[in-house]
Length: 397
Image (cartoon, rainbow, N blue to C red; front, side):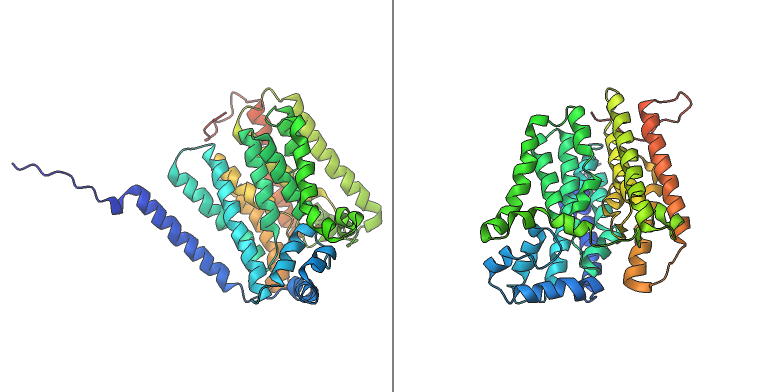
């Protein structure tokens, strides 16, 4: 009998098939994003477009010196640059966000890579993050820039997991420079410090990088106080307990703002500090990466859930980390489902329908249940019970 040698067809290798599948999915998701580029939100019509038009009446240096909007200077640099390009500002603003969608998905993939070496799982993690409905709607439809600060915040979290101290501080500073909402993940910095993953002496990097992002405006002539206090102006811009987000204040819609504003801030602060204290006390037991992933998700979801004056987009980091939680613990598939659904309800109300597709109070209750489950998983991972079923996770630290 004649022996036939197996002929390998490199074009059909598993690696090539995976790359082709990923590429097709990415192209399809880009097509979906492109189909939404036509939409002009109220934020674009009343804020972003007028800012671009005002910058066009100035020189570039004048634009650096004068902050025509309510954002921190780094994002206004981008708007100032867009004003100099003879292409639709609507498209350019959205393209910037879509570019950062890629980087955001990349860091999710890198976090998942700490759990598994499977190329298929890493590709799926990238695609899952790139396909999050609220991530797609945020940049491609709404024209918002949440993917920018979220990319740097998630990047900071990844570098913290890796013990890359200076990079973690630098990325958190960049996140904070673009959006104040980076504070939702900021508690991970002290957690990493007392877990000896970040060095306290490297904290100067945060301040150096943050100040460096403001220097173009300051050098161009912007008063230092204006450059440093942009977030103070933002914080005082609205006086409502709830700004179309699904959170605890949906159960207290008719309570007076002034009477409960500080109560909400104190309540949220107490919850975050308690969680940080519990982590500190049990720092020797915190040895699994899944614990850090759960903790990061809890910080990112608890603050917008409890704080007053939260906007519809403020679960953005929580949406991304919820997907990461799933890749670390397949039992909790409903964590991203519920979290992203709660975000999507607010997006749909503002962008498309103008009505609640689901009672916000019911959604808020479902999210509260998810928070409690993830918190329980975090505690039980540190204090495992003999009767507790084993987690479907791979330990890696």
